[in-house]
Image 1 (cartoon, helix red, strand yellow):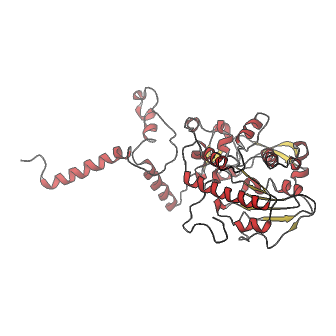
Image 2: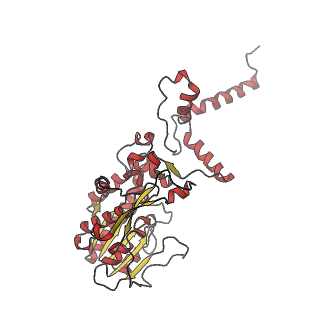
Image 3: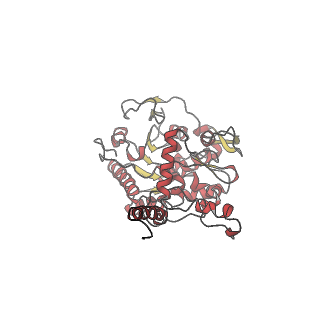
Length: 371
């Protein structure tokens, strides 16, 4: 009599195949997955495998990306969302959106999307050269990049090179496009005081001012810089921050430090809106373009940026320019015609680090020249 009857043999093959799937998944292509918080088993794990080995197994299993993606989709379906906030050392909070952590650690590289962003910058540079104006690319680094030492220990151990920031800066330099790497500036400035928020995704007022002044230097207009003593007041303690709200906390574990603003960084009077220059957006859009005449002499300055420059640079632009415009980069999908209509003397392309990669587009560039 055979060990297994014929009809049971097929079931045996099926069961063995299912049991082998996790092993195959360790070597087969997989979907992208969050960083592993445990990279290796604890020492002498066999003494208490349930406590010392299970965390490693939970981070290393076949088709981990596909399983976690399915779990996340199920969570969204039943309405139990996953936290968008990563808790770091000493009460620091970090945003998980847009793979910002993986990007700062060099764990995700999208060379095609980075090259597309460099294409956009190169085109803007040629536009400004044709106008006789000046152009600069600068990218505010992620808070994960600037406050690297506050990331969880497991994340710091996963840092690789190059990062997408490295690729972007290197590509632009190879093309001869003016680019300002803000990472050394922020690293040096941190030794004298905070430049980024601990419980918010953004830089603080000091970091914003230092970046603006560095941009003016790079554009060959040091006369437009604002002295910190003129623009910044005393440090202030802050308990509010976008990451505190997103994490569902009533208050942070440790307060943040900001600065009062004054003089050239504060709101400026006498601004006159310029209409018909920038393509309108929905009034419900949180990134409504800013286009103003200031009533005093100065160059026409335009910034294609995001939330890092939207508010913190408003006073600086108004106090230094005869007219200024700010629009959202929309991950390379802004309208090039906005630049042509505004006719800036100085143009700054400033997507934050996590906003550098261009979003894919099925239709290619817009008819007006945007992407």
